[in-house]
Amino acid sequence: MELVALLLILLIGLGAGLLIQWLPMRHQPMPTWPQRAPFLGGGTPDSHAWSRYHVRYYPMTLLLIAFEMEMMFMYPWAVVFVEKGMMAMMEMGMFLAILSVGIVYAWREGVFKWQ
Amino acid sequence: MIVDQLILPLLMVLVTLSVGAYIVAVLDRLMAGAFGAPRGGNVWLAPLTRGAWLLTQHANATEAPDWRAWRLAPALYLALAAIGLAVMPWSASLVATDLVTSVVLWGSVEALATVVIFLHGWSANALLTLIGGYRYVALGLSYILISMFVLIGVALPAESLQFTQVVASQEGLWNVLRQPLGLPLFLIVGLGMTFWGPLDLADSTDLAGGTASEVSGPPRLVWDIARAAMLVAFSGVATTAFLGGWLGPWLPGPLWVIVKMLAVLSVLLLLGRWLPRLAPERCVTLMWVVLLPLSFLALVWAGAVALWE
Image (cartoon, rainbow over all chains, first blue to last red; front, side, top):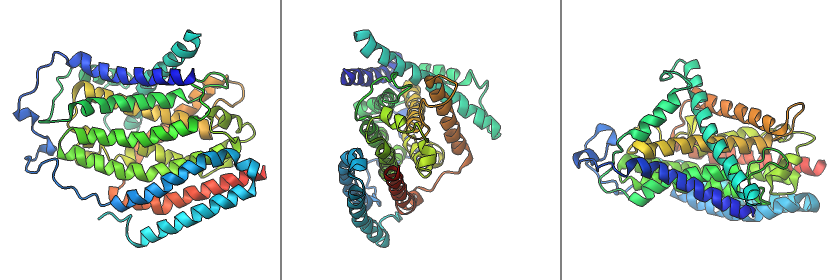
């Protein structure tokens, strides 16, 4: 029943968000084409929005994937942690230590620099 | 049964969401006044006036936006905030949806926020909004780990992923004292998640409004409400995870929750007015090299304390 309630809350939230936009705007005419040019802080739209953008933090996103996988182990680990005691602590400690070496290596390689 | 388990939770979330968003707008204007910035008229009426103005404003459009995604993004962000408010307990029995895995659900709300904000920036089909979106992805992927580690930290003593259990485990000592690194780190996450103040990289003024720079009228209203509501949801989760939720002497539980949420909100809004905006290229280094190791430390601390107790 909780999941049904949650789904209802999600749908009503989404519906409210869409309704607040749709109701006042359903009779609004489209703005003219000159007005629809990109705003760009007042500059002229010389470049297209889909022009190449160098995502310089890209290697960081790959590093994140390793940690996201680790989070999946961590949720069940958190529940049994106190029961398993020191063993759980050491296991996760080793795992985190290995991943931290990755961070140090990435740091040395300038992954977090973004320039 | 239907009324108890479906309608009441829904009403609870909707009321919290709308009242909370209004309170955020009022508090932020009060802070602005205290810092000497223009408040924009009467503090209590100005949010309503602005809301009514946006609702009746003629919305502009860009040349070829991704219409569906553009309209969906603000509504989705609002729905995510509603989910966050749904898992936050008001007392031991008064919870909209008392899921066994509510901590995991909140984690997924944080992760999906990144997707929704990027969608908002991408779908307008304009340069500044897109840059705002790309910047946000860098921030969002950096803060998510910090948030996860401190949240796992509060789940350790509770031996559960349920927020009501997390509060119950703080009966003796609140997590803010038991795990002193947790709340400061989590507040930084909150500023990132709502891209507020120092971490406002997505909708920043140097991008002329960032992902919202092309958005006007009713969609802008939904976006602004959703941001404020997300701040409220975040303060609710911070209250639950670190400030002992409904625990406290004299007052009834839900009142304590409200007092603590207002305190968290005030701190966040104060930080937002007080601190300068972080340079986006520095924020990735800061998050991964300084704050992430600190969150490891917070987790080890939490684990050691949980075992010692």
